[in-house]
Length: 332
View 1: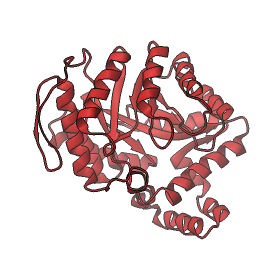
View 2 (view 1 turned 120 degrees about the vertical axis):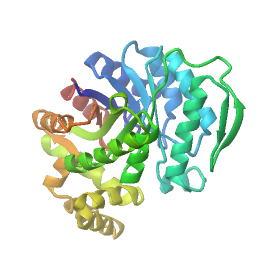
View 3 (view 1 turned 60 degrees about the horizontal axis):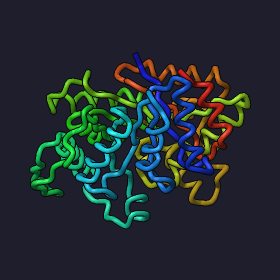
C-alpha cells in the first residue's frame, strides 16, 4: 500500500498558527504524514514541535533539514526531542540542499555534499542509539557524546534526500529512506534502481526502507489557474535555484528544455521561460488541473513500483485557499 503524505508549505501562510493548523487539517483528512521543509521561512523544528502538541495520530517529519547549518550531534538531539514530543511519530529527513542556500544564506562552504550527508546520517544514527558516540570520519571526529536521557523509546528513522544517481545510491546504502523530488515517472524508476543498488551494497533490506516522492500538486476547480501555478513553480526551481534542478531535469533526457528555461529566465523573459515547459513534460513533473485530473496523476506516481509514499506538495505561489482546496481534493 502506498501512503499519501502532505508537504506543508513554507511561503503561503501568514502566521505560525496558520501553518500548524494545516497539520491539524491534514490529520483530519487522513494523510499519513506531514513533512515540513526548512528554507528561509519558519524553522522546521519549532513548527513541528507545536504540530506535535496539536495533533494525535499523523506522522511528522522534516523534508529536509540541511546537513550544514546544524551539527550531526545537534541533529540527533533534535530528532530525539521531537520523537518524545510527538509520542513516537517523528521521522528525520536530511539532505545537502544546494550551494545557493548553503553558501549565500548560511555563509558556509558547500563542500563534499555526498560525504557530508553520509557522515551526518551515520553520526546522527549513532547519537539516536543512546550509546556513546565514537566516530572517525573525513569531516567529523567525535568521541564521548551521549544522549543524557537515553535513546528514544521509538527509534527515529533517518532518511536522506538525493537527486543524482550517486546521491540516491548513498541514500539506499546508509539511510532508512530516500526523499525524491523533480522526477518524471521514468526518471523515478531509474533512480529507484540506484536506490536498490545502494541498499544491496549496504546489506540493507529495502522492505525496511521508505521511498517518499514529493510531488508538486495543484487541484482546483479553476484548472487553468492550477496549471499556471504548477508551471510557475517548476520553472522557478529549474531556472532560479542553482544547477541542481536543471541538472536533474537534464539527466532525465530534457536538457534542451532545462537550458532554454534557464536562458530565457536569466534574460528576463519570464513568459518565454514558462512557454518552454510544454504540457506533456509538466504533466510528468506535477499533478495539476481539475481535481479528477490531478488525482489521476498522483495515482500514476503511486503505482510506480518501489514508491512507498507520495507527498502532496504545493506550488510556491499558491494562496492559502488554493492550498486547502488542493489538500482536500487529493486527500486519501
